[in-house]
Length: 418
Image (cartoon, rainbow, N blue to C red; front, side, top):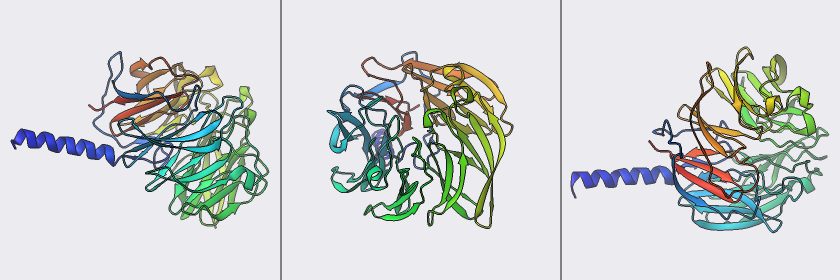
């Protein structure tokens, strides 16, 4: 074998190995920070966009849902709906189907279909349906290990637009927020589904968002939202540590709280829309107790699609009520708005990889944006192919040097390797 051939074979092995061991195990990645570890990516695209490697066009039927994807051990997981059922799908990295599982009835009310993103954990994958059915499946064959309906068991009530929380893993347990009369937050043994602890009911329905896990002064907390505010619980025993009322219009708290070095950022819809906008809070821990103090508020960066990201010392995101979806940059320290970009639609979502923001607008556009605190800086953009039905609300993923974009029954896979 020549040196050149050996080099090429080794390069292919390395590239294949990167793809097969890629892990984007939860919604917004394994740590929930919505940042890809990828390097060696394209820094600009042609007008047609990066090369389309493959597409899937049969994830459910019609407006199948708004679930994003997770990736682990050479498998892609997502969910969709068909014939009134919630279906978990598994594909290989070439987009070929491996298995599917029927996780019971799906939401058929306003904006029908699935919402949450399956959570992968080695041998197993977890799915939380829009009507509360939580299931643990084998990752290789999609066989049921255990299942529980969290709304029914904890006397919860479904939301105006149905449950959308993506399950959070933490060591040997997973967390779920049924928002019922029996519990506001539940920790389960991820292998058996048995209850480990519960946080008492706060008398409010659940929210649409997913939780954050943070540690401050040796106190480890899970922080999430319900229909009317934000609360934190001790990960050891479920003890309620604080509750912060932050009431949105239509009970739409959707964003995962952002934490950095003793400060929290929480965001929902703009005040003029009946909500609060964004708020930064100082977190103080003393004697096992937690207190919160307001630092600043900002109305121009309001959001209900969990589409705000903290990069360096600035928040970037797309507004909701304020001007119906403009790109906004806010100074993390002061709360001052740096600038407003152009309108992308209030349902836009984003992710980050190798120093750049990938934004999926609700106008079916995909943009590559430089997170520049001085100016709105779009590098490239392209439009998705025709065919997908319903809004483009599923969050994009950049992993394994590929960009994945979901729209209705379609999943597009683009090559973004440099």
